[in-house]
Length: 513
Image (tube, rainbow, N blue to C red; front, top):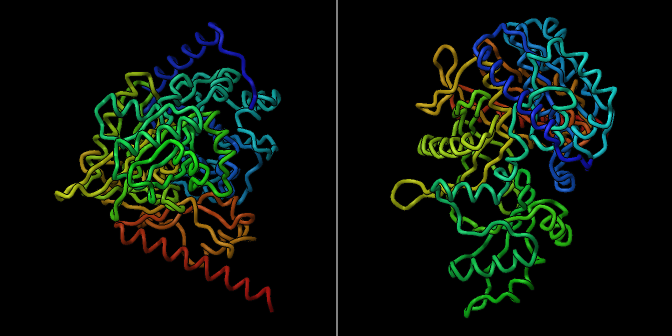
């Protein structure tokens, strides 16, 4: 990781001036579709690279923010999209032809694509900072810096330094607030504002701390069957591991008993070892908390936004779809969350958002919960973590919003088209099969066209793809299936999987002839 010098007082003044100017220009133009603006999109995964490397096709995750190309539906908006490696032209063409009411050629003239031509496992923001000529090309592509800003996946010191290098404000949290988005920081904020959260301990610095915390937790909760160990900066559940207390001595567990079993944690990340996990604990810290048991267990999430003028807004709720050995890995989501509790989740999310806004937070973020029946006909919701950045629920909702030009109704927790009709979706970043390996983005688009597996603008429902760059090498892609009901959205999803499987099987058979 690039070692950056600490910000000088002059740097801090520049950051404040840029952010203050952004707040003023945002307030003046937010409701004007025709206002000139430039959005520099930096989909940098500035997270732990060794943990990220265990996610299949993760270097293509820079494509997840391609949904922001749909900002080009605003006729005076320019987009500069930055990537580590070039994005295939058929993928760009696919997004531009999704634009409602704007000719693709008109949009293409307002889009600038800039790549570092560097596929190394290094955050994009770092690659950009090391290439002064690329930075100059970005500056030259911005017609008016006073109406431009950076939109990032996450904001660390790297993205802040990039903003200073480009003299641009950043639509995201100052890195000084980063701790609030860690597992430990989340638990502290939840406790402060009175939200229910799992029993546990935070700010654990190493494996010895984890061992003592597990032992203490079991003494507090003798009936506890399992506990979860989480890295503070874990991503999509990849930093989680489960400790099993079943088979513990009747007289109670000792520190030695826990220590002997700690190396046998059940890791969610494929190929993770205890030695590497211990190193990560030393580097980023972690937490221990009870494993919430229950046959009917849900994982709802509230998405919020704090705009540059300081206004707090509920954006959406989702039920997250989880997988992995202990159902800890984020696979996708269903929108909106169950109507039995989505407004409760939204209310709790807004309480977190107001606390964050009071601390100066900015941008889109989410708050994750675990929900189990309370035995009284309702639900118990425990707050799990704050993702103080964009995440896996961000791009599907942006696709829905951009494709339909509709709005989220915070009173009902539903999304409505301009005609007042509700829309639902199921989305996944993990539609993956060996059968799909070797398919190029053009092949996917051809299959979709042949089977009418696309977005139907007239009916405002259908299918939209993403992560297409991961298809050929990893047999993996993302999909958002939108319909007027949960049932219709899920039918689109099943149809998509069936068609892709059939195509894959056909070509496998053909290759064996």
